Image 1 (tube, rainbow, N blue to C red):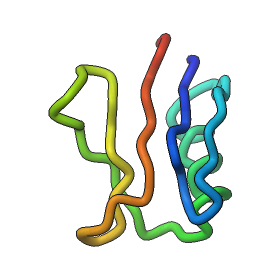
Image 2: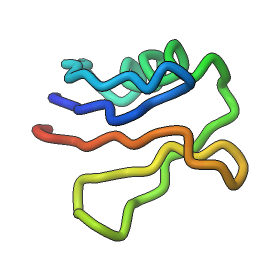
Image 3: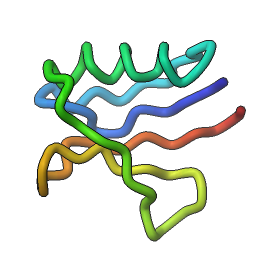
Image 4: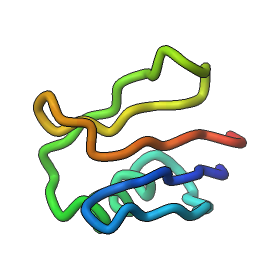
Length: 67
């Protein structure tokens, strides 16, 4: 799996990561947003782009480049 992190968390992390599965991706996102109370929501712009939401706030985006 190849995933691009876009403006994720307080430090606005922009990097490409290679998690083995979704559980590993969740741990990577948890590390950058410093909380476990977030959810993924599909973005309306592109098919493989998802918003990382905490409540009603957008705290970053991820884009799945390769499954």
